[in-house]
Length: 165
Image (tube, rainbow, N blue to C red; front, side, top):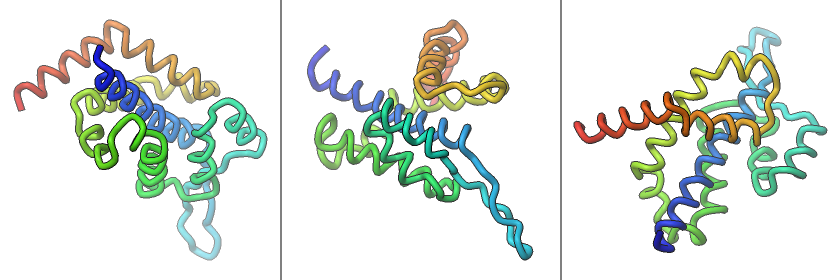
């Protein structure tokens, strides 16, 4: 595989790490706050100090994303911003030329993997809710699903659907 393709594949994997990590944080570290004086309850990301220590120790640069989300509302805007900031910091200018992120986000490889991840998270929700899985386990579980017969069938179907569009 040519070097440019290898860098692109690494970029897509790193981008997916950011998305999977952000989803993992939201899945396990949500807290409801508010409901005082007729305020609406807000869903916040609240990562305990011990968990932040484990994240810092085990997940390197993803720690910055956890820190940026900790104590903030679990909103689409905050999530998107955290992922994009991570990707800009980790991918742009190293794996992808400056200004080339949009092409990566729009690529068939990234979009297919993202849709597959979303399908997996919906299918695995009960299992993931039944016990705590660390981030490495989430990555491994998703990779297994991606390689499974069901995952391959879904990927093939998405590729066929994309050809018809």
